[in-house]
Structure formats: C-alpha cells, structure tokens
Image (cartoon, rainbow, N blue to C red):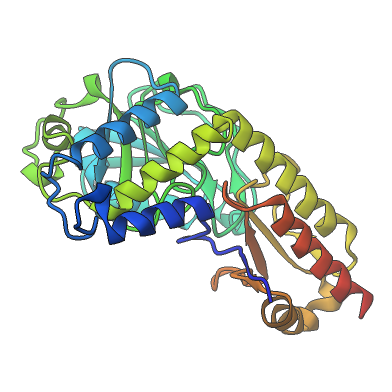
Length: 357
C-alpha cells in the first residue's frame, strides 16, 4: 500500500532531497567521511553554509541590510531570544494560536506585552482583522500560519513598528516582501528540512538597541559575526535545507510553490465543502491555511470519526491526518513536497468513505 505523508511536522520532504542527503551521509563530497561525522570547520562544509544563505537570499529576494543565520533550539527558543534582543519597553503580539500564545508568554518576562487582538474565544478559527498596533511598541509579532487550527495570514501586513513573523510552517510556500519585516524566523521541519535547525532572517539595523546585557549565545550579533559557526551548527539539517532550496529553485521558485499550494488547497477544500460527512473548521474562507487543512465530521456523522481515521490511515495509507490532540478531527498538511497525486488520493479516500455511509 502506498503511503501519503500528511504529517504536520516533521513532515514530507521531496524524495530527491532525502536521497541526496542520505548519499552525503554515506560519503560527503567523496571525502570518505560521512556528513554526520565531518567537522563543521572542514573546508567542504563552508560552501554548504554559503550556498544555503545565498539561496535564501535569492529565492526570497532578501534585500541588502538583512542577515540570514541558522541556529539550534527550534522556533521555541526564538520566543525567548526575540524579546531578549529587541524588547526594551513594550511589544505587541497578535494571538492566533498556541504558538503565538507561547511566544507572548516568554516576552512577558522582559517587558510589557500588548495583545492587540485574539481569536482564542473562537478556538482560533479565524484571523483577527480590525486591530490597532501601538506605535510605541518595539515590535509587532505575528504567527503567519497556525498548524493546529488551519489559519494563515497570506499577505504581508503593514506595520508602523518592526514586524516580526514566525513563518515556521509556510516559509518558501509563497513570495513575501521581506523589506516589510524586521525579522522572519522558524523551525525548518515543515517546508525546509529535517528537524534540528532554525532559520532567522533579521534586519541588521534593529540589533544592539536594548539596554540589557545579553548572554553571548543568545545574542543574534554573535551568530551573525561568526556566520552561524559560533558553536557547532546542526550540520546535517543545514545540508538537507540546502538540498530543499536547490529543489525549490529547480522547480520554479516560490512563485511555483505558491501556485501548487493553491491547487492542492482547491482539491482538498473542494472535497471538504462538497462531501456530506465533513466540514472545515475555519470560519472565514479567506483565513483558510493552504499548508494545514483542518476539518471535522459534520455533527450528524460525528460518531464516524474513528472509523474514518482507521479507514484512511490503515486501509488507504493516509499517514498523519489525525487532527492535533487539542482540537481533534482531521488535518491534512500540504507543504511544498506534497504532490497533487497525494491530495487526489485523499479526496478519493473521502469519497469512498462517503459512499459507504
């Protein structure tokens, strides 16, 4: 039985990326050593770092004045590092889900935090729109895609203060105007690489403005100055990111990724809206995520939830479609590597189950 990987993260990677990374893990650049055992100071690894940074800048059209660095610790470490480096008096946050809430919690340790808006009262099933960003905030933080609830901010917002965005799960899925952001960051294990590396795109002129002392390891300037080599970087995940970036470039860049994302979403959301058994969880169609498609059983068919999961996973190979434990239902994560064929297989599975009921 063919398996289709709809896991929310770590998630599906292009087969070419997996095979290329695996080959280097056996013999890196003909050195006779594995990528897993070379020194990060080895002469053959610096070009990997250099090309990865260069492709970030090329594919996202990052303007001058921004640095790209790679760290460990996941996006969750950035929840602490961001206020450590940027929050002097006040920060503004848009609360659109669990990860936004966790980011906000860490920021409160460093100064005043203003929650400009929240959709918590509706279990985060929409993106708040009409809110005011305080002009005296040090920065405004958003989470562009919410993997648990299936909402997404798909446009670059205008902000009177530096805009910081957690793009863990939708980076490289669409073109973005990086010049509108002070910082973009995320864990790479959704749309970019295997788990273990975090990417940071930061506007250099914003650094070094806070009055507090920052521990060396938690200061972004440390990692910029050392080219992400202050300490041993996650070598294999960075290499897998490089292979993914090469794959994106070969396949038409972020414009092509955006077109595919919309095609996948039309296929899956179209079936959710048509099928009598299912309904989407996001209240406003414009807020629907193209990355994480969340849906549940219609009320009159709620007792079929477990039966559908068993059928989809065990009989039709739909891996990872169980919804997050906090919300239940189903979630089809359709990141860049998910194929149209995979989405059509999921739709066929839904139709087949409907025909039985």
